[in-house]
Amino acid sequence: MRFLCVLALSVIGMVGCSSKPPAITISQPLVMGSEVLSAGITADAPVINGDQAPAATTRVYNDRDVPVTIHYHYFWYDEQGLDIPHDAKRQFMRVPAHSSTELLSSSGSVNARQVRIYISL
Image (cartoon, rainbow, N blue to C red; front, side):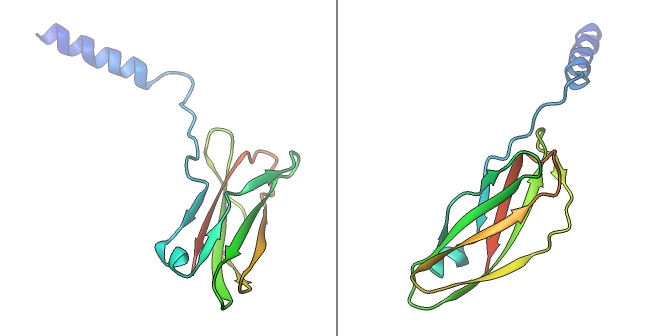
């Protein structure tokens, strides 16, 4: 019994200490609160443009009869899914009634490969 416990712990230790860490993927590139959807705002997932210093664009739509001010923040990640710090702060944009606008962000890092945007009111 003791031998089986030592063997199980050894196998778990070897698996946990493998040389290549597992890649983390960004499975939800667009995050919006329910209050944003209730305000008539919808959005497309962000699209990354460029390889040298990637930038991302996100198209946001307002289906209501009044303009809506939204707040947004882009988060950038490298190939393994690790956060890339950047100076961009939470920003805001006024989306005109029955119209759309484009939100932009630049990663500032050549290592950026994935992006997530968080939109709130």
